Image (cartoon, rainbow, N blue to C red; front, side):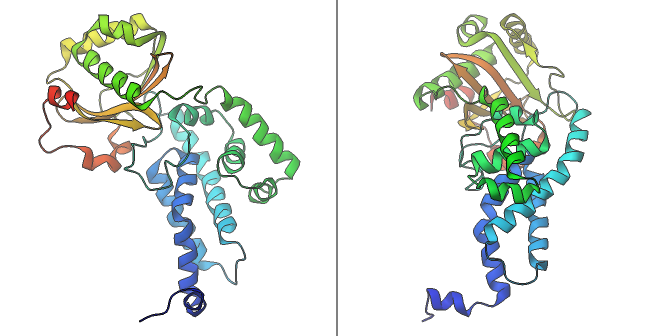
Length: 313
């Protein structure tokens, strides 16, 4: 029987130890890359690039976690330049790839960053975003953040402070209890499906905003819909036009917010996340871009249940 423990670690070849060090950090690196980029595919590419660079590193590394964090952060900073240029020409509102419940890699959903915070971070400079995530979210000591960003600690402290002030207002002010969150999500799905303006009026805040990300790939609103009057007209119009009616796949946490996964127009997979304050829905985030939902392919049922059956579950 093979002996385990310290002796086993000592018997590892340098290559095996290098692989083990990377695998131990892989989930955290994916989480960092996703939070920086807002895209699973880009995060996966960055982690893969980090692995290739890690294999080429010569000599021993005293702190693999810190070294790998620097590699991934710098790769993200390089990619953010082109990513921002692409988003300037993006068709319609841009939303990050949705994190749904427990379907993502273990560490990706291990913090309290919601889609609201992700959008707030989009308004930061790349360096501010990196400083905030590393220091405030991933608990990297300030001196290590300074090394990663190749800046003086005082400058990094200012970057993190500015970023913190910008995103503070976007942090959830309170958490909606799970049962209440599910109730509101189900009620909203049914009211939106039916075009029930009376029920929608009871659920939506007066200044509600609807963000719909189709990326030019599927039908979606090209601009953010703001205000309850416009929202009510919108849902009433969709009820008249939609055939077949939307199908509820399941209620779920979407980017840390109450929401659900559904099938629209018989084939379009979408996620809907609801930001709720004082029992009213203040913001609706809908992702329909198929490129951003590839990781949810298994959510598409072969034979969707009836809507009423799904709602009653």
